[in-house]
Length: 501
Image (cartoon, rainbow, N blue to C red):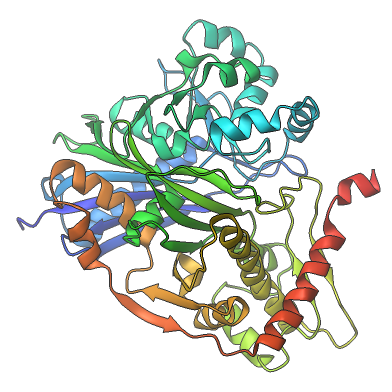
């Protein structure tokens, strides 16, 4: 077999996937493994970096075995990843010093609050497009340096390097300590105008620059596979955070195009092109992608912490369902009445965009003796859609644009009931492409462009095809009445930790 393919590694919050794509963007084969979610204390979320690495190598091998190909058939590899999550390891041995501190983790809340009280939020926002929040990487790195015995001294002696999960994987695959503009823009340490680590921010968080990776373009040859992985010098040439990868996979290269990814959380991005603008409505300004050194496009992003994760919570913590696929059938049973007056605000890690309330906590309200599990499941699906509307409204207010349609992707986008519900709650068209694994596809595209497998973005646009368009069916009156209830439920869960402290 002489066919040539691109292999994409998508290392996400709940698992790791390897997908092999052909030149038309078709999936040739895939493999997936979940990893353990570690919760040492309330609000703490960790992963085992060694398990993640081992799973990555396993799914790569499995996807190649399924396709009956070897390394001679792989032109290049792209990597995409859960963003903001941080690893610290010894560059000489490759041994991690601690678990991955995951983006959902809230252990650095006190540090964030102290810095906000010192009036530093505006400075951080202007430099990074982000807010002082536990979500981002800087305070996680600071926590590691302050709490792991001897780590700060080791960092001064060159015995510690840090990275988001893309950096951890690429270092293990190639030996190169690198990241890309999109991931660097989520650390709260990179100036998104200068596209470099910012000295003032490094000083603020007391992080040594020499321990951080080199920042490169998202489409770039970073290195080749280590000999122990492949005897052939296969390049790793694509790297970008998972939500930016989905934007690329949706071929949303024009200013104003919007995509929403339904994964552990929801992440809605609007392409801003080459013009950076700062949100005043609780959204993030971030790097969309960078095709070459110092040449980037920007995006506005609404980050929602808990959407698909609430379905996982219903399954694992409450046992209301056995699999995520059950939610569609359960919701259909009460499709006429919907959630029956129940609202579910899944603020398990506080509220992200557009509220940014670290003290908020989850809430289910409107329960009666009539309430059944179908209503709670329906309310969980509605919560995914309402949170998306919160972000869309902020995005429209920030930009003055009227968003008429959104492109959707991610695991939950295959749920037809959820997508129709989303169109109803938004009052906008929801468009699902034929390939919904757009995160993996975006990483493959970036890798392929770097080595000439694909010629340019025009070629990628031509490959994007619609699977289904969902048209709003609710009246304006119904839509607004139910959304008003959602906003009231959100107001009840805000600042909960300050209320009970």
